Image (cartoon, rainbow, N blue to C red; front, side):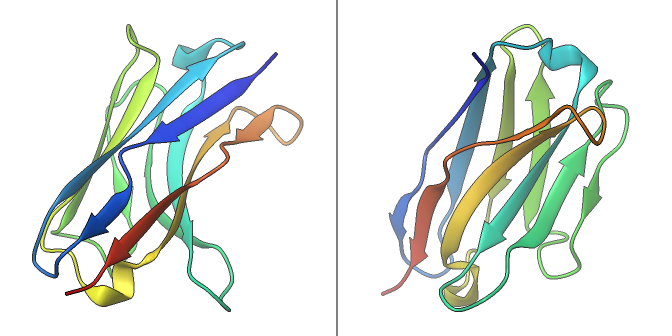
Length: 117
């Protein structure tokens, strides 16, 4: 059974930091590209960051570039999202996403991040 379990969300003040983790099971983690998406209330889900199976490169949405860092540890079957200089507009449910093909792709259940004073 495939599982993606996110953790690390919570309430943080503007300018603060959080690190999200997403731990996978039930599939060959090292074969899959991993991404983070987010969805704010009343908005569509949007891309945040991605990293290929090898971890050789990264890609970011313009809104988070320079503040967020995605990384992965294939031995631990975990992908991370380090979020610094958080802003109220970063408030959303954050989801991790595993992609191998149009057939083999999976979503986590999400973790809430709230940036507020």
